[in-house]
Length: 439
Figure 1: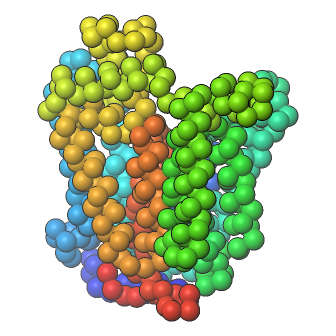
Figure 2: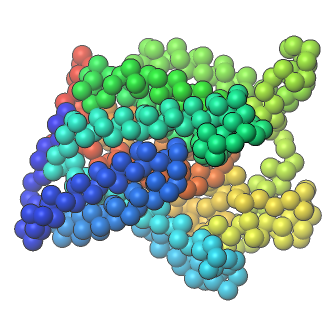
Figure 3: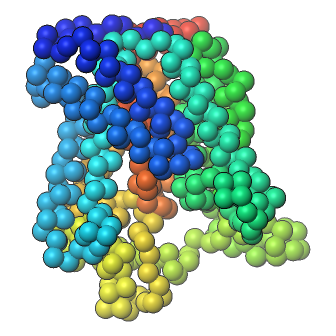
């Protein structure tokens, strides 16, 4: 699957820029591959290294194709960034921690989704060797395995390999926090499964055995976090991954996944203690976090406060990530449950976007997801079928958690960029694949 060489390169670009920019991009990807599940500091190297290739390639693309240089979903990302800046400007007098913790800078993740797209597209068109791609994929696989091993030692051994100290650890599936790691795993595992299903056609691009080990460790890590929303999203995304590869097997797996998802939902409706007592006679024999319950007054009060926050400021919102500074005031004014208990976010991607940027910002986020999904479906190739389940997992998991934390923001917007930057790959009747020059 060698990528075709680029046509019509900008005449004004120097030979040195043509050679250096792709390597800066691949170095950026290496930082991301190593850091998404291990270190935010490593991930920062991705932004540092990709900003120059991204800006240069965006200028080149604009000069060549003007408005057609980006897919429609990327222009919506521009709109989100612009609306977010306008929202922060209007709410500037009320925004907290403007200097100590400038939340406006979090809009950079949306913008780097665009820069990553054009930088990766240009680098892939100029040619990426199997050796480079294989190395980057294996770095990603190994980082997941190492992170899960550290999580296993924490939970089962009571020892932190990173800080080199003993402690009482719970719900640690990896090096990063349990929520970040659990939800990150539910996003990336369907993509890795898609790669594993195509291991025979793409065997020169990665080691299928190492990928299989990564899948096992990643799933164990997700279970160790006991993250219900992530597990539910995975149970829906995995059958879709298989269905897009093999309809018959996908339908069988979908049946099993639906049964497990039903157990998860019913178990939460009943509650961990009652379910465990009914099945085993012991109230603590079933993991509590997986069946904590769906009617938690605390979580529902957060959702209600977010809806009120949107209703009170429907146009401009409250500013980027300002909900945590307003939730106590909203709860107390509207006599909501747990008036003394705050929250760092709305535990829902869509509610958080609405309370941050108002209804227009929420509609823009929904439009971005719809357009991205349409663009993946229009590809009608193996890459589109690998990344579409990630989008579905994001929408489902986003109902239970705000997924744009640092690590997962890097992951989500890189996945977006990569999914639209790779040239189309047509799947042939016997499961093989070939690159198409079609857009």
